[in-house]
Image (tube, rainbow, N blue to C red):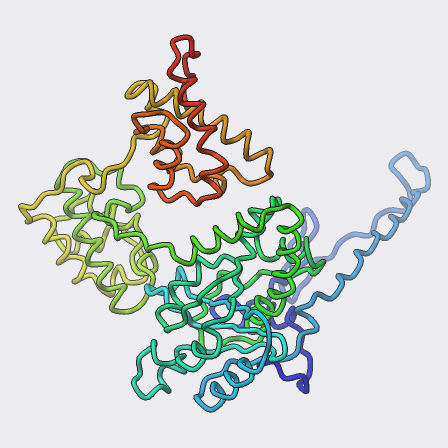
Length: 494
């Protein structure tokens, strides 16, 4: 919680004193040694003697000193940002402080700004390591879900925030890019009934940039530094500069929500935004990939089923180790190292260890684990197919002209019509209708190319009502035109 009686601190100075992992940052300044002049022997502690220049030139004229260079214009001092004047903030880690904060939030009024910080790229899990909440009349509160879970009698994450959920569950929650936070909040039992997403609202409103900093600057005239967005939020203790950054992520969200709502209302886009917010809130999670190991970077360089079997076995070994240690898989052994080992197919543990490209912080400390996985891949009789046998997917559009020319004509005609409409209403084309939806209905259209049939097909694919109304008749007309005998031959799709 922000304490108005604490002394303001400089977020900028704190930022420069910390690295992303919380350790003191090394100074960027470097000691510059003075180099000896040409033909001299400069040594530390025994500087070389440099001859003074002669007062006369070679032709006997007095030497004239060159005019002094004007001093460079000093750069204007940077104006202090909102981070520089922010009061000291702290994370709530015990039950007593948590319950006090919940009472204050419940006594506040209006929508509730919510954000979560994860440690993506550092940890295996996608759990939240900090929860930020702001409400008018209450203030800003930063909750440490790891400490609060440990302080809960059951020790279960879903039990740590029951009181907070009861206090704000029926209120509107304001996010910026809600899809990034809803899953990790759900793990803690924090589930909103309705949301307002300022990032999605910015897209519908037609803003050119939709990042939080850009939108805040555009609508509120406040500049936010975003230097800690990729930090390791599992770090403990969290540096003060990070906590200030986290607080600012929600302190301005309610004002931003009001400004965005006014912008959407003036453009007649309230219904569009409302349906998009509801779709994000109720979107089902994507099912897990059938063969996730095939997403290893560099897999295309492997030749033969045996190499694929080794890569698969090592991928699963790495995934198990990463989950066990809660470290991002790529930080244990990178994809390139697994692919290199699979391609080399070493005959012994020693040979595996000697592969220079087999790198990573756990590449040698867990060498027995990797060797066992490699051996399993080498000996298995369950060889993977050379091509993925997972969920069916459409071929890339560039191949349609050869594999399905009618679909190619439909897709190109409809894509042009959708792009035109997106420009007319000032909405990004991918928000007017997702590319996957347009490709799917173009590849497998309804039997009757009527407005109603296309509308039903789009609805079945998950398009929102406003999207169906804006696009169904245009897609139907484009499909009909593409079926005509005099339709122009499609060009190669890139």
